[in-house]
Image 1 (cartoon, rainbow, N blue to C red):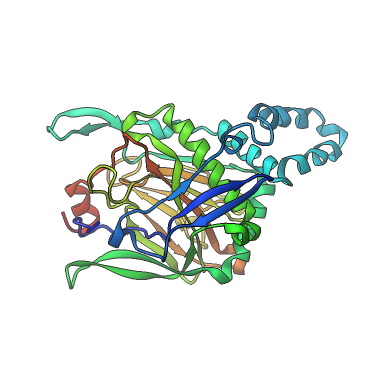
Image 2: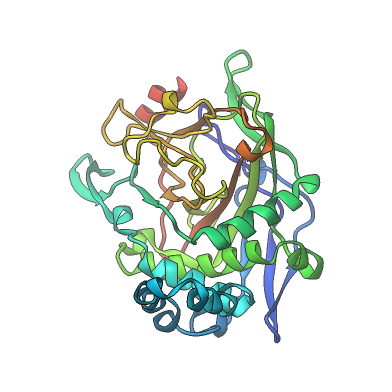
Length: 376
């Protein structure tokens, strides 16, 4: 798909893959793509995930048996020592079944209602009507718990030698065209799996599969059909900012456009920070965070949020999940630094959800383009 909206930077993607499951809890990815390509050049390819029954629900125990109930029991036995609590952890996080059940449980407890916030919008006929807020943001802290997020960070770091310079696009004033560029100090890859890949990062694979199925199902219950998400398709990216001012330019993830079912179909972005637990303890809490208060930087900055001409800064706190609409939110990442060394590197795992059968990708408003990118 050729981009007709000149001024908007877009994120890029890697090759699509298909998820296949094998009995015995081993997740296998069959690669069906060929080479890394740009969304700008070819539109949005996705991963087709054949989510079986055991991944969509009941695999390794139901959410009733692995979520808030266990937390409640832990609190009751707290005075008796940590032994009882520790004894339950292997069943929760030391097996694929347990980890996926744990993720489903935490997802079930998460408040995702901000994604259904309404806003007064102007429709194609020029009439005002209520619609899903295009700048809605949902922030879930302590999403997976320190044990799992720490293990996922270790898996991500082990993949560092396989990461490549991350690419994106931006508008070049001189040539008046959209040009590709490498993000300085930013490396990325797509989690593909395969027998070898799953062995290298099983928790990252399990997280992507479980989130794709579970979050789409949960959001579809509160969203109109135009915003429904596929529970079997997604694309993803694991990225790290190495410091020294590495950053993301202002952009919208999905440039939009194309006929229904064609082009870039990414609708929702779900971004999980893999920083060490407690990475930002003692700092102001969301939504009162400020990049000026943190020498490490690397803050997610959402423009026109909560109101026009305002900017909301969101810290890359460990175990923080951020959700927003891929086809509308203008955002960037402030320059990041690593004063404490590699520990301060900004790791993020992004999963992009695509629209369902009746889903609609927004076309970027010309006024938004002019305001943020100087075109339109």
